Amino acid sequence: MTVEDSPHVPGMKFFVAVWIGLMCIVGVEVIVTFQHPSPRVLLASLLFLAFVEAAVAVFYFMHLKFERAALAWSALPLFVFVMFMMDQIWPDAFRLLSMRLLSQ
Amino acid sequence: MSELELSAHSGHAGLMEESPYGIPSGKLAMWCFVLSDAVTFGAVLFAYGYLRIGSPDWSTPFSFTPSILNGLVMTFVLLTSGLTMLAAVEAAKAGRTAAGTRWLWATCALGALFAALHLLEWRRMFEEGWRLFQNPTGGSVEFGAAFFSITGLHLLHVIGGVVALATIAIGFARQKYNRIDVEVLGIYWHFVDLVWMFVFPLVYLMNAK
Image (cartoon, rainbow over all chains, first blue to last red):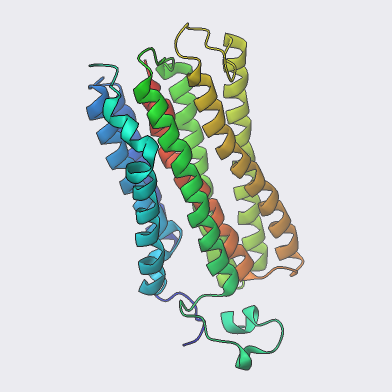
């Protein structure tokens, strides 16, 4: 196994299209925000759109999609595991159960 | 020159264990750094989430103009800097040193512009009376602590990236640094982009009037 160039990396036209897509998602985020939905709906919508943006950035801008799959399979599950443990298993996370949203 | 040759500066490539991921060690190190830094930002954003949900008098001070509009312009600048960084990486890979250097400087300029816009936003908030532990609207004082901590941590990363971009641009033009160094810096810069994709909606849009 050798260290090689990342194969099949698309050209700049493709990345410009991705950039336009990301800007459109940001536009949608702002439009959704000023529709003034409830905090829960707004948070869920913004988080969903942010994760879509992040996935696009990681896989295309950071070229993870064009590296060997082993890199993504090593990095992403571990990261998700750590974040899950921190948010859900970390003792302070249980305090969330007794907290409330502004609208309630 | 292949990446193997570029990464095996010592001349002991034949004795070295092969990379399990097929990438140079510098790139792998940057991925490890990015993952650990992502956990740091994750922790800070979770902490912000707890504060926001736990505070019944949380302020939502950002109107469309000037705050959200300024945030939109900052997002545009940072995302565009990601595109110029990609152009720098592509040029460096193709061996076009002059073009690669120009794109690196363009990225550096956009990063500096982002930082300047951010500092202007901070100045406006300071003038309104916002401080780390002071809320001029009378709501939770934790808003200032959360806002300035999160955006400050991100700004610190942007400023660090701008310094690194200038350093690599100068070194790349003088052929002190190679295309792998440009690629490694690219991973960092896109990560800074990525963090902003969470900071803008969660810290600005969630606190819009």
